[in-house]
Image (cartoon, rainbow, N blue to C red):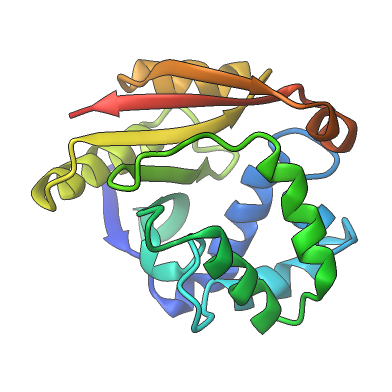
Amino acid sequence: MAINIRKATENDSPFLAKMMLQSSRAGKKDGIFDLIFNTNDDSKILPKLEALTKTTAKAHCNFNNFLIAELDGKSVGTLCSYEPRIATKEAFIDALQEVGCGENCVEALDVMSCCDFALNKRTLMFDFMEELEGFIDVGVLKTLMTKSLLTARLKGYRIGQALVEIGSLETILFYKKLGFKQVQEKECELYKEKFGRAGQVLLEIEF
C-alpha cells in the first residue's frame, strides 16, 4: 500500500482535532487541551480544536502547518511543523481566545511554560506526530517526517526540534530512530502535578 502525503486543508479539521487531542494526552488521562478547556469530555473539546485549526491567529496548530498521510484515500496520520518566531505563545493565546477560551487558557499555558526551553527562532519545530491505531508499523510516521524534512531543507532550514514528555519512551525512541538526538531535559513539579510526567525532553535533528 502506497502512503500519500499531502498538505492539510480546512476540510481536514475534524481529523486534525482528533490527532491533536490524541497527541496531547499521549497515554495520560489529561493533556494540555483538557486543562485549557477545563474538561476531558471529547464531545466538548473536539469542536474547539476543530475551530482552533482555522483561526485567524496563526498558531502552531493552524491547519496550514500540517501534513496528512493517506492510505487508500483514508487519513491515517498527521505531522505539524512550524516556525517558533511566527507561531508564538501569544499567537496561540490569541487563537484560543478566538474559539472562546478565557483567562483559563493563560493559566493553563503557565503550566507548560515551566518546561520552556530557549529555542532557536530559526529552528523548525515538529509536533502532533500521530497515526491512527491499526496503522502502526506500516511506515506512516517515517514517511511524514521524510517529506517534512525534505520540504524544510528546500526552505533553507537545517535544524529541526521536537518536545516530548519525559517518560514517553516509545515516542522518544521513534524520534531517535528518525535521527533525532536528545539535547536537553527539564523537570518541573507543576507539570508533574498536572500531568503525572516529570517534564519534557528537547530532541534535535540536523539535516
